[in-house]
Amino acid sequence: MTIVLIAIALYLLAAGLLIRDLASDAPARPNHWLLPACIGIVMHGGYHLWVASRMSGGMDLHFYSALSLVSLGMAAMTTLAGARGRMAALGVVAFPLAALLLWLYHQHGHRPSEDLDWRLQLHAWMALLAYAVLAIAALLALMLAAQERALRRREFHRWLRALPPLTELEEVLFRTIAIGFGLLTATLLTGVMFVENLFAQHLVHKTVLSVLSWLVFGGLLLGRWRYGWRGGKAVRWTLVAMVLLLLAFFGSKFVLELVLQRR
Image (cartoon, rainbow, N blue to C red):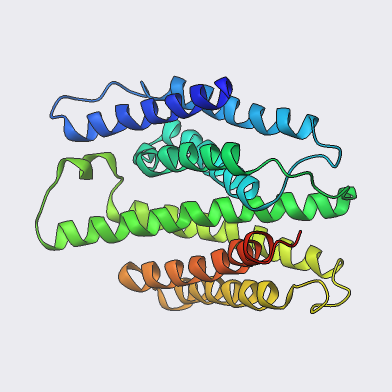
């Protein structure tokens, strides 16, 4: 319990420091949020490892645990990107989200997993990493939409200083989508090896929605390469694809594990 509360407090401290900088006219102290964020991430990951050490089946990958692990990946990627450039503003959302999902996992998680062989574990970890990367892409898309809206209305808010120029933010968005698309492709390909009966394994909705999300992300990357898609179109396609992906994995898990009480 103590490690969870400390991690949550550190996440919120890091987010609070970032918010203070965005609201201040004074120049921000570089990376002063970095230390609490890094320690929070280490403690977040350490808590999952501690829980896993007490589970006979290894790492817990059920609903709340999977959400917490995805938010851990988002927090880690935000910290890495923010330490190297002007993407720290992502932490205003990513750090509180990680704090909330860690708390939910602590309160409602801790279910022993089945004893999975290494190939299935690799597939599961690859899926969680893909979701984390593409969730970051969704946040970037929202930032891009907010930046475009503010500039179009000539509303030069203080928070705009924390963002890279519009064209650079677009490039980061599409690079992130490309990485996430590659991971999602690998996840789908490796997942085929473990499908025996789509209906018996309750994989129909998950598979269909995952493939639809893959097609939307792929179509967006193709549109960017072939037609130079950008701006509002890129934002809409990214968010639609992310909603499909969330419904595919977490929507299916929610129904099976929390509504139908199946593992």
